[in-house]
Image 1 (cartoon, rainbow, N blue to C red):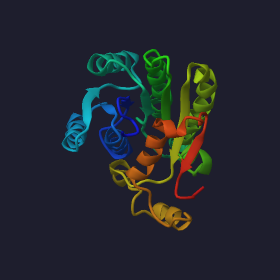
Image 2: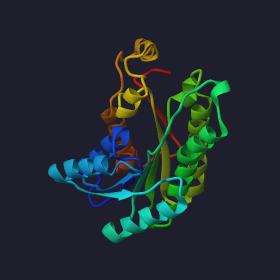
Image 3: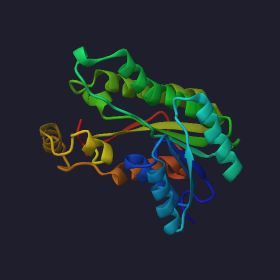
Image 4: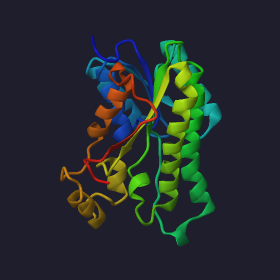
Length: 249
């Protein structure tokens, strides 16, 4: 029997990158997966098609995690399709690095609305539908909250907030058998990090050299840790922040 057989998982921001890898990994272990996306419908459909091709079960559902009505619709669609929720992966996120002088109100609120408010709204909606046997919430934070790189004040602040939320909700939801953990990736090679100019940059090269495992992270490196946290193999873990960075810190 697969580790997540008969489980239902919602993965936010799952149309590409780390989120897509997580959705595929959970499905490969037997979970029925909701592939959430904000605007990239075509990419989300490709993820669903690949999951189905490999014998899994998935459906794509649109929704902006920073919009409470969208989140309610996301979980209504999940219940209509699969009759429950067991796993929530709060992966949706944005980043925009810049110096202190480059920070704007609009940029601040955009990152906090998605990276922080989105985690709270999705978690709030999900726990209403977890069964009495509990469930697992996995937040995708960032190694930035540990490394605190220059030029990342707003982004690092959002991910530090996710660290705090993980600890608080683990205590708040523990009595309901709901585990809450965070996976904080180091630099990972994705469409986003490539488009952002990080891959191949001097910063990326320097980070790889400082990483004990001497390589760039790949989306599946993160997905495997998330799958472990979603499974019963991690049933005694909650409130943990796992730095998945190849040893870089």
